[in-house]
Image (cartoon, rainbow, N blue to C red; front, side):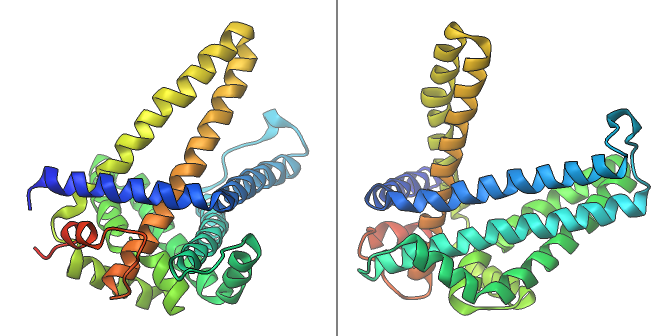
Length: 275
């Protein structure tokens, strides 16, 4: 199948994902909760740094290398845990919808709570990888950036299915990566170009939502423009995050042999072809 055919299929599947979200608008709560949690986490880290400096902004200084990596590792752990926790809840709700059941926020959160061990293990593992890549990038110069960039791409592809694997298979970190990479190898082939469809939708959303809101608010007051722009940006990010998780859940079900009636199976089968 040609690249543009795959792109077209990806576009149609993404539109179906939007339809699922339209019928289950409560799923937007999960990325919003994730975003709010991350803001609070960043705020707590900043507060801790200021408290350590005696609340003197000018008195803050860059920590030594070991301390810096320790802080980065801790931040990565919390960040990955929060993101995967709420994404797991969202994917479970999508799974309930695909089965014909009524998804609720409570059911999603309860399911994530049942996967706390796997989620935390993954957060530790991913944080370790992230910290190592950060150290390589900072200590090998330009070559390090190229190496970490390539590794980052491979890592993103290999871990594409990690969240649904954690959710539905309750796998540990190494098993989750291995299983995710296996699913990718079996079905993705050279059809990764379909991912561009989400990029196109997101770009259009920014142009049609964020930019107009900023311009309208700016004519009222510059601060109003910034506020409306940030609000529009948050909404777009929340919608795209939810849609991507729905898309991922649907494809995972298809890859593992569990058809999803809400999606055109021929499109999904054509999108994920063998090399």
